[in-house]
Length: 460
RNA sequence: GGCGACGUGGCCAAGUGGUAAGGCAAGGGUCUGCAAAACCCUGAUCACGGGUUCAAAUCCCGUCGUCGCCUCCA
Image: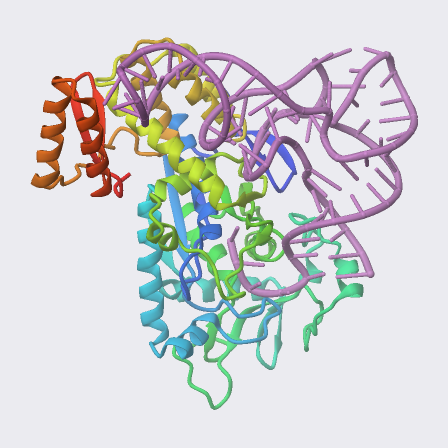
């Protein structure tokens, strides 16, 4: 069954064909580690995880690379303003290096909690300064750069196709520019190498053929993707906001130096909105995964919530909808657990599921198939095996889950015992009173054919 | 100001020409001494107004509304 993916570059669904025999190269733009990731950022990484799992589900061996931007990402993409890392350093009093390390760890922890598979290669911008300088030299040698007082810039007017990915109206941008372009020759020109401000020592700076400074934000992705995946690889991903500037400039750099395309497919995850508005790091307050955990949600509830919408559509976050996902997840987990040992995968449903997943990662549809299986008449072992098979893509960890083993105090167990006694003697009023008493202590009794089951209300 | 997207039942959200997937919530029911769990049943004509078509949520035009990008952003 063919896998069809939406390619932003051609604005169309294309059948996926790997470029190489041995692996599918997947490069996903990682975080700028100057702050925590918020759940909107995380939505994109969940999408990319689904993509990777889908590729593997289809039998491909994936080589997944993710960068960590720890230098050069300025507060403004107009190539003015402070470096985010240096700004974060001033804010917290820690060194830029410490900040990078701290938030990198926090980010990896978030991915882990969302059951997102780790990239095979993590690469930090600061570990690849030499590669970036070499790439800039290449671009310079081909005549695409010019020097200004504050750095080396890319002359976008020299590339006829500049901005094709975003379908940029370059002339319209010139005319309607709302920002001061400074000394730059064209609004779309961007920095490849920035000089350290004179008389000022930056925490992160390096020697280069052009002077002491640091690399521009876009060059790291072109340099590192080429190093680990080759100059022309299979799929490059990121958030939709990367289409007009970041990815557009990566393409320009690679085409200028190598004269070849950067990636075969360009895929972008769309934004999460909160109460119909975008969540922004710079607006101050934002929801972290930890915020959700603190409120008692399982991180995988958020993952399931994200799967309920297509990655190429905005998703509106509300607490009510997250509650819905949490309950759904709980039901799926409990059912899968209670079905016992898995049997064989149902071929018919497997086919339906694959069809949806391979249709540009239609997870809402794939989930609908999942529910159909869960509520079908198939024998429990078949249902279990089939849903665990689906979970290779869904990544909800359904096979690993076990009911929480609540620590039930002796006193409560005694009450439960007493109630059982009362019930067996049909003293219903007394039994009900005991139920009330147990409930008041924060526990719940469920009578099952196997006897009473006690649960802590909090661990639910 | 320029560009773009979207508007589907209480909430989240599929579907982009043939008469509305799924999840959650709600109501009803089965089961249960009670309760829970589980299961079953019930609800939308798709922002509004025109148009094209045998046929439109799905195409075109207009109106209203919301959101995004052009400023950092996944």
